Amino acid sequence: MRNAYAVPVERLFGDDMRKADATTLEYVTSTNQPTRHVTLIDPAKQDANTAANRAMVAVECGSSMIFVGGSTDTPDEVVHSTCKAIQEAFELRAFAASQDPESDESQWHIPVVLFPGGAHALSPAADAITFMMLMNSKTRRFLVGEQVRGAPYLDKFGVEALPTGYLVCSPGGRVGEVGDAELIQPGDTELTHAYALTARMYGFKLLYLEAGSGAHTQVNPALIESARSVEGLTLVVGGGIRSPEQATLASKAGADWIVTGTLTEDASDLDELRQRISGIVNAIQQA
Ligand code: 1GP
Image (cartoon, rainbow, N blue to C red; front, side, top):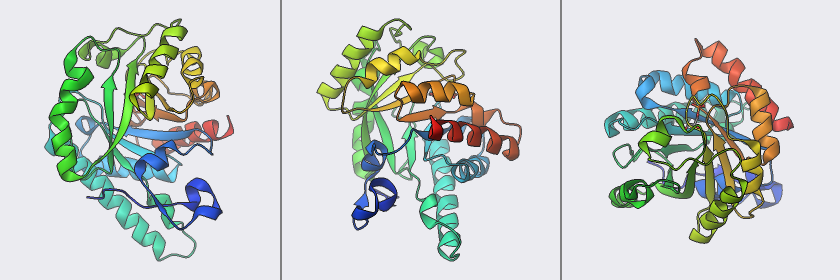
């Protein structure tokens, strides 16, 4: 278990601040850089070793964070074995890089963050958790109920909470249905702005605009722009992003982080995965 993992701070804030270590929240919310990429790994969709191999490829291709989660009914043992396998793989790679003057050890200090479907899908092996309120849910359970069930566990194991407002946008997919969300429609720019203000007033640091995993359309860039106009939130955008062009659209609209999941899951092998993630990462770094 790593409570606050140590990212060499010069990677985040420039050479003048290389002494201190950063928490995951500082790493996630640091703003002086281009849009970054998150690889979402759903533990229900592959075994732990495969997940670790995919996570390593993702980092080699420039992914800056790994989310573990997604499906609503994955038991915690499966989530835990996946987090553990990824952490162990990264630690081995970091050690190997530390022995090689040509390699950059800090490349492997990448946070492994829970992206839970509920309080059942937790693991002490994660660095942090997107501690989310599904703000447009009509059901108490997703606004605060699962959070109340999970908080004592997270406190006990020292998993850092990333305070996150989670907004499900049309088409919404399974998370929209299961989460009983009053979906944000593509033209709801004022509503999105109001949600973003609300998120900030609650003290959330992240706002996640979600179109649903495997969505046929991504979040409308106008909604991202609308949320972006509220200062002080780190914007995470995901759902239905499969091409560099789509990632560029989200990045140009103001996303700080772009999440892709399906892209990873349906790659036929690690070479295809490498190509896909590199394509997205290169696009958002230039956007
Ligand atoms: C889902 O936003 C993520 O929660 C990722 O969606 O699977 O469509 O990439 P995709």
